[in-house]
Image (cartoon, rainbow, N blue to C red; front, side):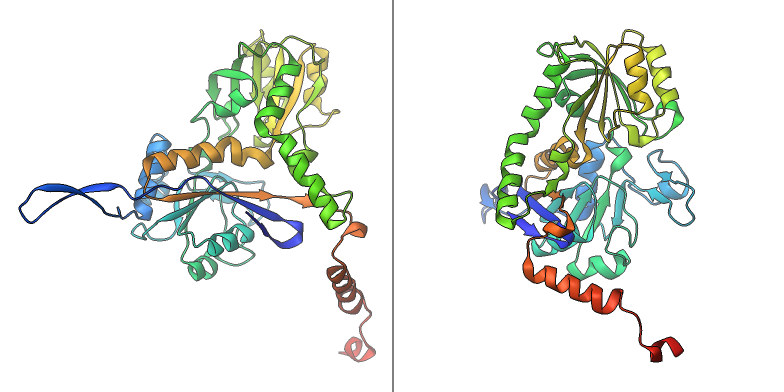
Amino acid sequence: MTYPGPNGIRMLMIAVFYVDLPLIPRPNSEGEMHMSMTQVQTDAGDVLEALNQISKGRMVMDWNEVASGANPYVVMKNSNIPGKSVMEIPGLVFGDKRKPVSRIGVGMTLTESVIELASAMRLDLIVVHHPVADAASSGGVPFADYLPLYDLALIEMHEAFHGLHPGLTLLHGHRKLTTDTAFGGIPGNILHKGIALEEVRTAGDILRRIDSFMGRELDRDILEAERAIRGEASLQEATLANPARLLSGSPGHAVKHILHFFPHTGFTLEHLETALAMYPETDTIIASISRVREDHPFVGLAKRRGLNFIVGNPHSVEIMENGLPLAYALEMLLPQVEIFLLRERITAVPLNEVGHAQMVEYGKEMAAAHLVAKPSRAVQML
C-alpha cells in the first residue's frame, strides 16, 4: 500500500507479518492446566531487550552508559559545523519503557513523513537504523512536541547494528572473512574482506546477482507506470537512478578476493591503500550504500593496479539489506507484536514536467504573488 507524501515523496509500507495470539496455559477451577488464547503484553522495554539480544549487548539499557562513556556504540558524528553535530545513542531515545507496544515500524531514517505514516497506521513504536536529532528528524520541531501527538516511542540503532550479519556482503557476491567496523580508528568506517561465492566467478556475475536480488525489474515497472499516470516522462527514482556499475575492469574479469567498503563513512584513499597492502591478493573492490563516480581517486587507483571496481547497491535499498533482517529478527523474538517495514521511495521530476495542473497553478501563483513580487512602497517605507 502506498501513501502520498510531500515534495514528490511516496512511502511504501509493507506488512512483514501477522501472527495469531499465542496459547498460554492457565489453571482451571480444579487447578488443572489448560490452553487458552491470552494476549501477551509487550512494552517498549521488551522491545529494547529484544534489540539488545539481536545486537549482542550493544544497546544502551541505562542512561549511565551514556553519561559514563561506558558504551562504545554511543558516538558523536561531527563535521565541525557549529550546532550540527549529533550523538548516536543506540537505545530508547524517546518514550517510556513501560509503554505498551503491539505495532512496531522498522525504518532506515526518521522523517516527518515516517512519523505521519506511523500515526496513520497507529503504530506504537518506531525503530530506525540511522541516528535521530530533534527538529532535523521531525519536521523542524522537537520530538517532545511531535511524537506525543501520536503516542509514539522511538528507538535508534546504527553503529550498534553494523557488522551483525553477513547479508550485505552475500548480496554483493562474497562471503566476508573479516570485518573491521572502525577501520583507521574511525567508528562506523567499515571494511569487509571477503571471498567470492562459488557461483560468482566474474565481475558481471556480481552485477547480475545484485540486479536479481534487489528486484530492479519490479522497480522499473512501477516507475514506467507512474510516469504514464502522472504524465511525467522524465520522472526519476532513487534506486533506479543509481544502478550497480563496473567502473574499472570488464564484466568478464575474474573475481575471487574482495574488499568491500562504504565511501560515506570516512573511508579515504589512504585507507584503501592501507587495505590493499594488508590484503595484496585483492582483485576486486566494491563500494556500496554510497558510491563514487568514474573520476574518483578510488577508481583511478583500481585502474592503475588492474583491479575490478564495482559500485553496488545505493543507500535507498539499505532498508532491504539491513532493515528487513532486523524486522524478521524482531518477529522471531516478539511474535505477539505486528511488525511493519517503513520504506521511503524518493522521486524527482523537472519542474516543467510536474503533471498535476492544479498544483502547478498554485505553485506559480504563490511564487509570483508572494515570494518574488516587489513589496509595495508602503511596505518599503516601513
